[in-house]
Length: 339
Image (tube, rainbow, N blue to C red; front, side, top):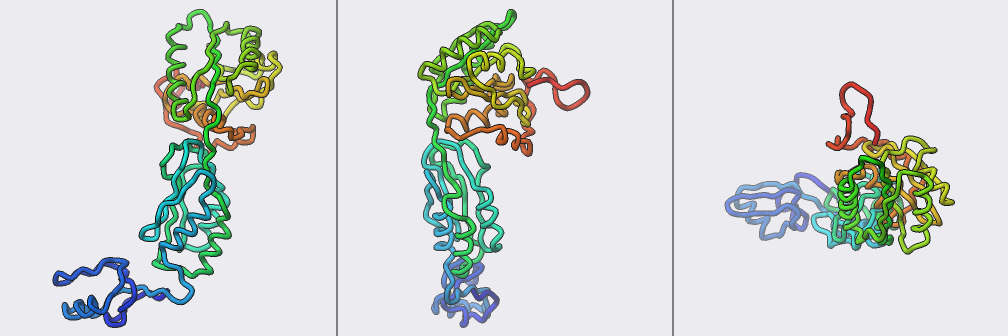
């Protein structure tokens, strides 16, 4: 594409790179310079304009943005009609956004003329939410460059994993001094967390804070129609041999991982019983504020695997905002409260 300052008469048929206003004449940015407009500008004393003229083999900004966005759009992602070199991508269903980061980074490294931006990977999204955007910087790019970008970006780099787990079982352990109202509030907070996934608390039970009692309830829930079990402990998990992990193993299950490099959310546990995923919720999960529990909960509701390696990779960006429910602030002196 040719670009630069040219005499008005030589700009005929090219695109105005910038808006021009003179004596009531308006030449809008990106519009074609017609012979009539060129004559009027000349009459108004405008001798030259900055113009862009596509060359043979170039692809216009809108078509290029559209083709690139269509290549990136995977399952449950749609592309809207492009405008001014931009094509936006939207979620077609509620779920968790999956992003091939290497593909997006590869595309962006091809040339400065092409850019793609997305929401963070694994972000919960709702239907109609924008999840990505493609922007072509100049008014046109060579077709060979576009093909290189499509090749690096691959196919389906952005897709939505829809929520598939709808029925959640909850087990709350109790100790003397733990008010029933605390558990009631916790269940209310969890129900609101489940709403965007159209999921519900299908089973709820309160048992003593004892591994044997917990194991019995886990076995029962593992055999019913719940699809995920969440355990809220009366006391936070402090060790792999503590009540909740011990209860999971007594129920014939397994602990996949304990601990999380996300704060609040450090004391989260993931495991399984009878083939069903189990989350040992950290204390901060009783709060409606975002914490590490949210990150894991929504992935599991969308049937996106959460492995030990996945959790251990969450440290960068894992320091979240302070929450008022913490017994002790992280900043300042003193020992750190457990979450």
